[in-house]
Image 1 (spheres, rainbow, N blue to C red):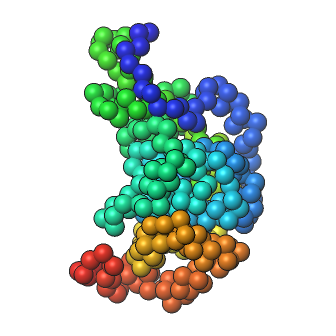
Image 2: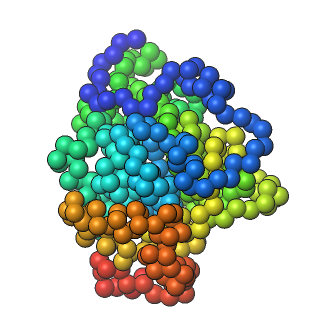
Image 3: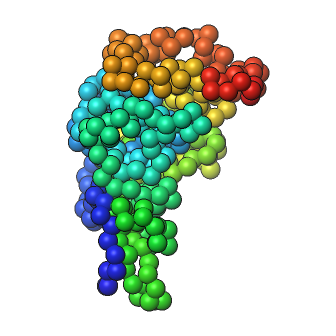
Length: 339
């Protein structure tokens, strides 16, 4: 096989597919086991220093913030982050000093709210290194290759771009056409956390709205923590089996965490807490501000329920529910127009 070009990026999260298959066989079970536990227990047991980790959801939507804050609370260190459509989650995790390396597709920005001062400062001062780059589609295909048990997936994506230059992909001569084809390497994250609308105690999960790459991500993860807005009976899951996006046998822990995506949005359940995101963006302009935020909202409370009380409690959360359901208007700090 003739290699025409190789990216200079560091290869994160790759395993020989046969070794990955053996690992899953030794560490996963297809028995119906009750996997309910606290977020604290799940993070302590399933996320280790130095892990290559990925967060589910998309941007500021359906993000597993309860797990993210617990990672910070437990002071996990030297993580390698899959920066795939990673926005608020990546910004907070990097700013807190938990991450050493990141492979970036879409990172370091809060979309229409502006750039990410905290995580950008961590890179600019050398405390976090961007060790590879890739496109959004390329990252989804890394997870797809992992889900399929392949070492790589061929694509035309990245060809002729500087992104390819800084990726961990290779370009070969296609043995069929003789033309260049890009080989995007599989990704097998050590630990993944995904927030969903509902799940049963075994880990069968249903997602309302876009699943983005969470189907692929859940199946290529070595260890998977699911947080859910509510635990439901298995009979409810089985009554609509086509809605089950994540099956129980890939899940290692299930944690019930209402409003577990705050301050991010949960489709059909609650809207973005724009005031809280604005507070984070203002404070994260300095290391001192980051520490002030973490002391106030993470280290001063024992769990996510305590955090929710700190940010405004039941009254605020009900307001976010009403905004999401178009029962109340919302004016964001970054604009004057009502939603």
